[in-house]
Image (cartoon, rainbow, N blue to C red; front, side):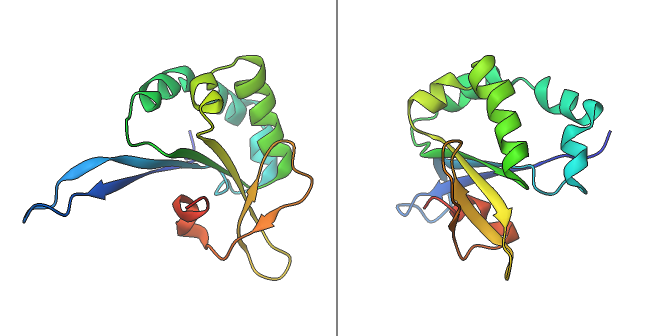
Length: 142
């Protein structure tokens, strides 16, 4: 099985201690853009890996995090994002807590001149370009 995503947690350290203590998770990112080709998202085996993940459990656990601002999902294409939204978010409603709280966000790795993360949503016609590079998916909605 190939690696299909990168998970990042952004934590807030407290300023009141000599030791760095974690106060809470602010952002969770899951980066699907690093798949080798767009076709992998449509490969039934790869899609099974994605759809069989316990998205409902992630939704439930993430919804309990008091400091969580957002969960950002990064995609390579509009088609792959749409397929994820159609199969996981809309039909199975496996991320309903995050979506209804406005904490579920989407980004796409794109750029005709310079590759950057772009803000996007399932109903957006145009991408909102950011200046953030590959390792900065967590910053797209700051």
